[in-house]
Length: 271
Image (cartoon, rainbow, N blue to C red; front, side):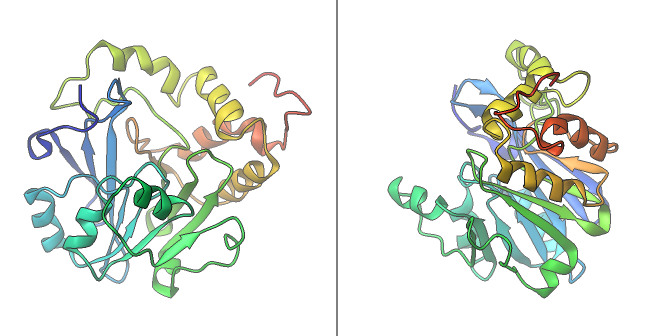
């Protein structure tokens, strides 16, 4: 089993979530080359007509054609230090686009011998409350850097369509759409209770509490409260199916302990 599919053109599922506004590019992806969690890029056509590309996946001929029809790529966003494999490929094709990512990603890519990509905006714990990407981007998006998350998460809200775009903050397994043309096998169905955003979601809540928020770290809790104030209804995760509506309720339920400001010093009972 490989990390990413060898034939992305054949297995990619392209979904126009909002006509001429939001399109997702869903592909098979195996965590540690074993666990089928799927991957997804999100293309957003901004008010200005420029495209913002979140968590880029393989740049196939079909994707290039889609982009040529939609408009120029203005921004390429690596939403954390894990979702960057195709960053160099996209930057080479669209060198005028501004590249956005979290602290540590440039160094990680350099250490791994990846392509050198110049970052226009790098979020750090120190600048997260002052960094502005630019007037036109800020008019369409709200964003929060969740520096406590082990993957250094950047979370975005596309205000015109009330759509939360995130990488590894919330999962919604199984990855049905992402493996639609590939076939995910029994492991994906086995993962569903762990990664589902619905029902009791007890396992995902515990993952958020113990791993992502590190036991209710106050910085993480503060970020969740800030995101909770945004006006969103849809959630587009990188892993698992899109949550088309009711996203705010899902977020509130999964982040309940953090929104209440619980910490490891006060155990997160009844997660």
